[in-house]
Structure formats: C-alpha cells, structure tokens
Image (cartoon, helix red, strand yellow):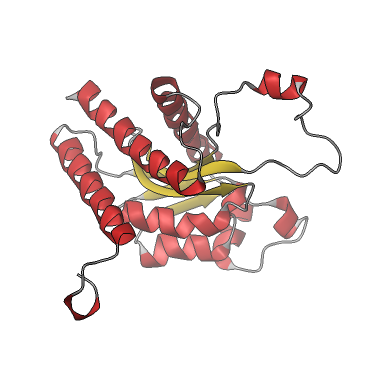
Length: 224
C-alpha cells in the first residue's frame, strides 16, 4: 500500500508482480539443478526491432545510416544472463541509442536479489570503477571482469584499483564466457521473434518484460 493506506501505484504493483514471478522462476530453476554452485552473470544490452520490417527493406527506403543523419530510436533491453542456464535474471528496459553503463547497476541489483553471483562479466560499454565496486563490495561477487574502454584510458594506466587490475592482468579466457549473453539473446529472438508488436514506448517496455518471463518459462519447460 502507499502512504496513509492508499493503494500502491499501478506501476509499482506491476513491478512487484514481475519480481515475484522471477523469484518463482529461480526457485524452480534451483530445484531442477540449473543454478550452479558459483554462478556467473553476463551483462549486455540488446535492441529488438520496433516493427516487423527487415534491415534490407529499410535500406532500400533510404533509412540506412548516412553521415549527419540522426539515428532512429529503438527499444532497448539491458539483461543479466546466467551463463549456465541462459535465464535472464535482471532486465531493465529503455530506449536507444543511449550509453550502456547507467543500466548496469539496476539490472545487476535486480538479478543479485535472486542469485548471489560469484563472477560478473561485461564488455567495455560498462567500464567504470563504480561498476566494479558494486559487484565486489556491495553485492559480494568474487570477480568482476569488465573490459577497459580505450576512450576512457587510452595508453595511460587507470588510476583506480579495479580498473588497474584489468589492465595489469586481464582474464581473457574467463571474459570470453560473456558469449553466453549473446547466445541467450539469440535463443530469445529465435523463439519469440526479433520484433515487438507494441508501438508506444510504455507498451514496448511492458512487452519486453513479458518476453523475459516467457523466455525463462520456456527454458524451465525445456529442462524440467
């Protein structure tokens, strides 16, 4: 309930429903042995098509990228994918093109409320010392592997400890497990399609969240 006993806002009730559904998914996944002893999270973003129009058709119509032309906005999903099962445990919706890093914390906190991750992997779009601190110091991950963004550092050594560790000895073999996020996105789009049916920004956000739940339920059905 809201202040003075008033009903909670509709958007808050819907968010709570999603979290309860995700918690139920994780309980079933644990029972099926899909959550491993040292879980690894791969954080990445994807952009579903906003409409059922092929890239080739848009190019023929003159919508391809041109110098000085403003990019068309597209629905964006930042996801935390559990690498062992390909379950999507954190999901933050938005509109691209935007920087990836601001969505790292809310998506990972959402996922960490369900599973205590041992390792977090992310590409250079999430390169920031505060993202390492979130993983290690707040959420208790043993390792955070985030590729350095050359635009943030160039040839200079990073000044902060976690980013310096990435420069000193980058665990490439472990980082390459980040491909599980792309594999999860590929599964998602093959089963549910690459385009959304909703048109408004709010409706697209709701559809993305429902697609995450559908993705997870299909994986549970496949493995249980």
